[in-house]
Image (tube, rainbow, N blue to C red):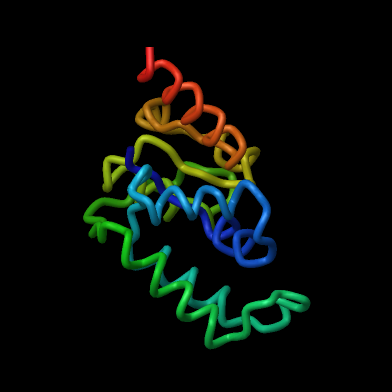
Amino acid sequence: MKVVLDTNIIVSALMSSENACREVIRLAFTGHIRPVIGNALFAEYESVLGRDYLFHGCPFDGVKRNMFLDDVLSVCSWVEIHYLWRPNLRDEADNHVLELALSGGADIIVTQNLKDFRIGDLKAMNNIQILHPRELLALLRKEQISWQH
């Protein structure tokens, strides 16, 4: 299952070891989901993880955050975007995530920012699910149960 992990998933996974975002990252590391990444999302990950003020109280310092990013990138498939689908989403800053999902053939965008992603103009968006990390985990549990029967 190909997914795009919105930046807020990465940040939240770093902030707490026991949350749905951290579990989503674990699924990527174990190969249960296959994240896709492109230039714009990579730049956003790198920029946000470099902002020390966002990580007050986080057990990861800047060096460890960069190591974590390297680990995340090691399980991602790189996608080049050759066509822009804009305008589409209410928040222009989110369009690159949708473009990556479309270009990379992702099934799901995993985000905590559901409201901005669930309203869009493109019909192609109907083929991509927009799920909160808890929704993804529930979906995967349900699919695992059906595989076992």
